[in-house]
Amino acid sequence: MHENIRENMEIIGADGVHVGTVDKVEGGRIKLTKKDSGGAGFGGGHQDHHHYIPLGLVAAVGDQVRLSANGDVAVTFEQEQRGEQIEDDRQGPAG
Image 1 (cartoon, rainbow, N blue to C red):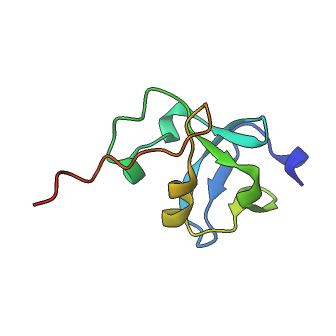
Image 2 (cartoon, rainbow, N blue to C red):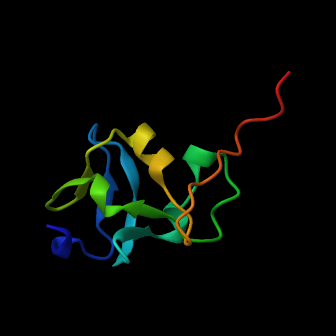
C-alpha cells in the first residue's frame, strides 16, 4: 500500500480533513511539503522546515492518502526530521 504514495498527493484524516501534502516517503515516514508543515495545528513557527507523519497512520491509499486518525488528532503525531514529536507552541504560560 505505501508504495502507492506519490509526491503531491493530498493527505486527509479519517474525517476527510486536509492534513498535508506528500513531498515524498522517506525512512518509514511521509515527508510533508513545507507549506503544510506546522501551520494551523501548532500555532505557526514550524513552516520553515519539513514535518513527517509515520506510515503506521496510513489507513488507505487511493487518489488521496487517508489516515486512520481524524485530522485534528493526526497533526499531533507529526514529527520533526530527527523523529521527535513536535512541541505545541500554542500554549502560553499558565495563568
